[in-house]
Amino acid sequence: MPVFLAHDGSLNGDWIAHYALHLAAGSVDRRLTVLHVEDANISGEPLHQRLERVSGLGERIGVTVETEILPMHGGVFGGLDDYLPKGPETLLVSGARVSGGRRGLLSGTISERLLRFGHYNVLAIHVLQPGLLGDPRRVLLTLSDPGSALRAMPFLLPLAPAIEHLDILHLAMVSRFRFSNLSAADAARLYHAAQSVAESAANEIAASIPLSTDRIDSHVRVSDDWAKQTAVEAGRYRAGLTMAEMPSLKSTGLSFGHPIEQLMRIAPSDVAVYREAEA
Figure 1 (tube, one colour):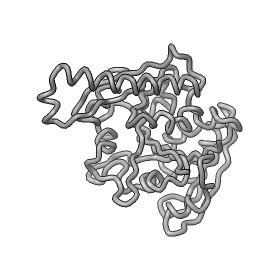
Figure 2: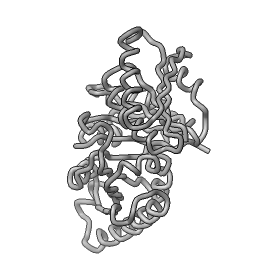
Figure 3: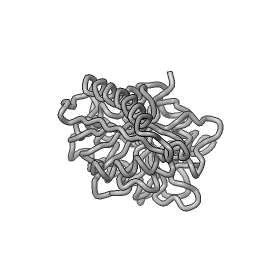
Figure 4: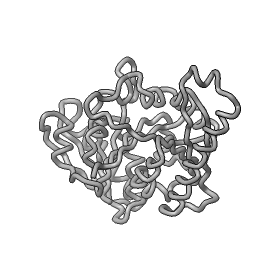
């Protein structure tokens, strides 16, 4: 699967590039195509130096790096979307804002649009720990439903050679009111139903990517706060990267208060939001 990186010419783009290089290193052709859409923010020698740095990093790990400078077409999104091959054979790596403020880390960004439209496989990454150099070693994958493990496979497969341990988390979600009044019997029923989903996902992943079963663990919690609980578990299992699936939000976009946004703000790890290409 060809791997592409949307690089905005910033230092944050360099941080994201480390992840893209590791994904490319795990692909069949070990090739990364770096895409930069021309804008007024950076150009000339400063841009050239940044892109050359990515090429140099690729050489060190045996990844061939090619660079394409693209024209805008209705903005940066259009420039990228015009160039990229549509479909499930394309994997695009992009970034989130370094600091969200009142705008959010993903909400309103080019990456959010790329995720929402589902034209190709997209992995949007918020880097909290640049020192990991895109090599988190321990990854926490959160499941939104029984099918989300399979939808994560285009991203897990090329990343697998760099993963030392994969923790799979499935949360049995209840309302805040119900959670505060949950009986032990009801909690046990919710737990066991979620456990079945998590264990099934672990088996599917073990059968599909080169990770032995002793490097994969599944975990279940009953919770009333998805973002907070996921962040707690990322800390508990010392995750370097937490992966979460982008929901289908074509018409409305990602609000500032959406759980994905909340997770990016509070997670103690890097966060990657993925969306598999639509059929």
